[in-house]
Image 1 (cartoon, rainbow, N blue to C red):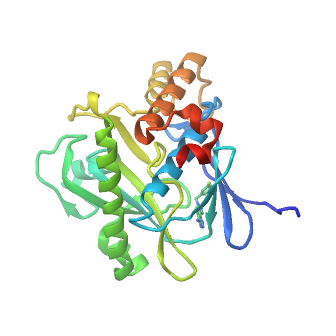
Image 2 (cartoon, protein in one colour; image 1 turned 30 degrees about the vertical axis):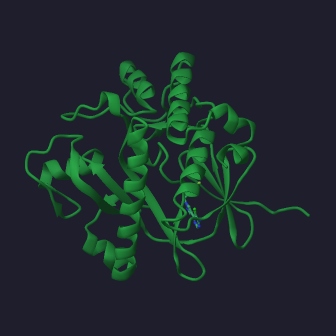
Length: 287
Ligand code: Q0Z
């Protein structure tokens, strides 16, 4: 029997395939993007780190919400998933003031229509985590929207459930990460509905590509924080005076290996699993 695998789409660093009517295959490559440009140099095993982390979090949050994961493949970089009807909103939870949240706060004193205390600094911890929804822009950047707009898109009842679940997921994961020396500044969830219209967590979850991970030991509000994973690549690109237009620069081997080490370190800190064990047998390592 041969499976007819159909390529459905490409993200910046991931591929999506159809396996059958009910199942998809999500494959994470070793490509890396910085300043929104995919670089010509790959980071070995980056896709495996991200896939392993997603699978880890799916396994540990199944009590909070069902998820789309059916099977982790032996290649360590591919997830077989249930097909969902994805909600047309991005669900970003922010525990700290960074990125577009910081930009909105500086300009308006609020984030996604939620007013915040005066005088917060860039990267400050928020009084409480906030769900800051955004539209999925087909091209270009997602646009932050307020809760009223998000509820109008998906329905008020469903949005209330999304908010409750997204905050519960963030609180669970950020507490886990903090005990291991990593600040989960913010993270993006994507939800869908299954065939019985139940809410299900989809896509990738709580990876360095969908989240801001900061080393807690270096946390210093009042400016941007170093990124756990991509900082060497960013610093190298900045040192070149590159204009951030395509094509991006080749990355030298020492920066590649340092970056790979950071991804592996994040995996090992967060999961408590030796990455070599994951490479040897991904399913067994995550049990
Ligand atoms: C995820 C994406 C990627 C390109 C669609 N369980 C699901 N059911 C239906 N649709 C999706 C999922 Cl995960 C779905 N994306 C994002 C991923 C390449 C786009 F690897 N798009």
